[in-house]
Image 1 (cartoon, rainbow, N blue to C red):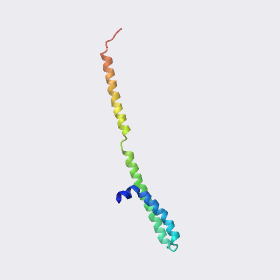
Image 2 (cartoon, one colour):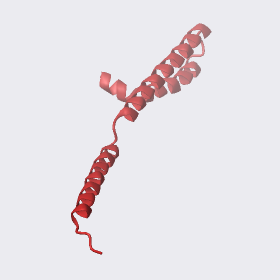
Image 3 (cartoon, rainbow, N blue to C red):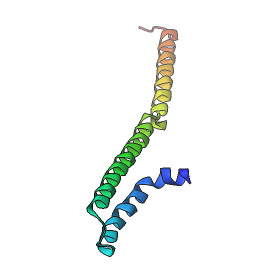
Length: 96
């Protein structure tokens, strides 16, 4: 259940936020204090959901991309080929 909430927390928050005005129209005798508390709770839950999504985005951006690893490997191959080319040029006899 916690994993479901972690993956779909923002969607659940959106459902609760959408249902709240419907409840106000359905039950018009709700005191304003309860509405203020519900609004504060929704704002707080929205902030928590935003921070959770930001942390997931930050974690995803800190992962190393496979393309970065491929670039490092390609640079190593290029350096090896340059070294081979220089040794091949040094081994060739000089002809005038």
